[in-house]
Amino acid sequence: MVKQIAGASTQVATAAEQLSATTEETQGQVRRQHSETDQVATAMNEMTATVQEVARNASGAGQIAGASDELARLAAELQVLVGRFKV
Image 1 (cartoon, rainbow, N blue to C red):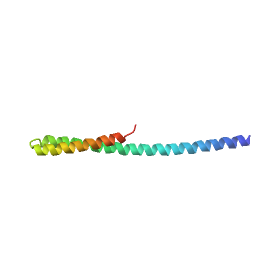
Image 2 (tube, helix red, strand yellow):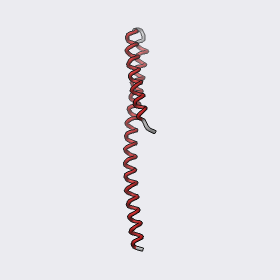
Image 3 (cartoon, helix red, strand yellow):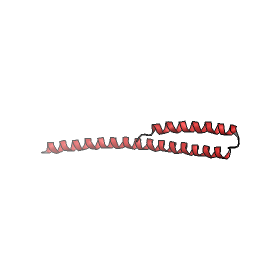
Image 4 (cartoon, rainbow, N blue to C red):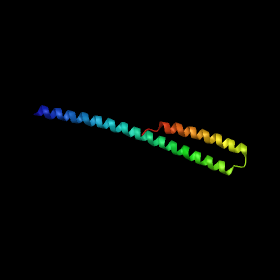
């Protein structure tokens, strides 16, 4: 009987260690996703600012071309960030 209790205690301890490791891994993944979400939000804010800048400076073709290039760069950056985001 004592051997059975000792064996069960060992199993419970092993399961608790595995659960702890899984919890730590999950927390790490949540932190990474939070960081990636922040990066996506920042990229979206930059894109919004660029679009607003284009609208304000629509009088110059050179300015529009530069802003369009910047928007394209930000869109590519956003695409990379979204590609890293795992659900």
